[in-house]
Image (tube, rainbow, N blue to C red; front, side, top):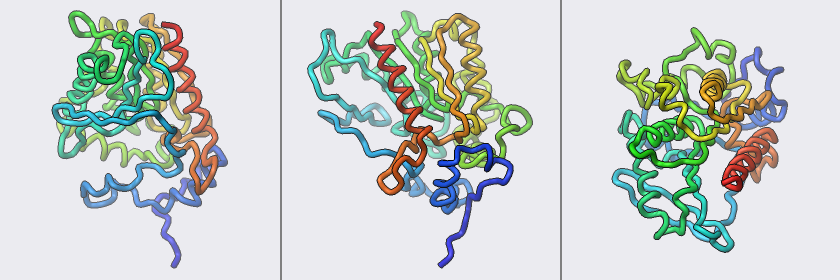
Length: 304
């Protein structure tokens, strides 16, 4: 039976894309039905978000803990606990409450709850050094990480965070194909229609779009200048590229140390496409992003 291509590559972007991505997309991704074209059913979440990922790394211990409305999963590495306790990286990737059942600001509240849990329980439960906390996330998770840095800075006294790692983050929920999405509107996977589906589910009220805890680009200068050092990884052929680059520039102008890396020829989902058993090396640029992000995080912790 002939398979139906639900997401064929647009002719205008084929020569701009990483050749490995083109091959993997034509082999696998184009046959996946985009969720925004389906009638909504929570079971959609049971499918892998993006194929092409590497297997999980082995760790010493995995534990789950309950928050008020969500859960956190912790991974403790092998080895001896360093003097003062383990540094901790809080990564947001979908364990928070999800839209459309739980629209804004539910996910933001859960992000704050996760940080508070680490501050209050991390030392006793996990051997964490609560003065060495970094946050990060990819896409919507990058949005939450950026917002959490601002929320932490807003507190009196501020909650100390040492680093933020933002991968293809959502920074501005007001943009569209009329402005910063225009150059990449035909790029694969995260199309404008798909992104608007995500946005409208999470932010159904237009008046919320410009609130800084939905769109961190609109945060006031006095908060932006207090956030920790940032590493921002963006994909050249992602509709979110421009807002990620602009956020880095804005932070840098306010005196925040920022490294922004643009991954040439790459579309939005590269972090999750760093190799798979069925197609080893699905996207070497994805593996490079993961390696770069890991090095940036380790360097930030070493310099404390």
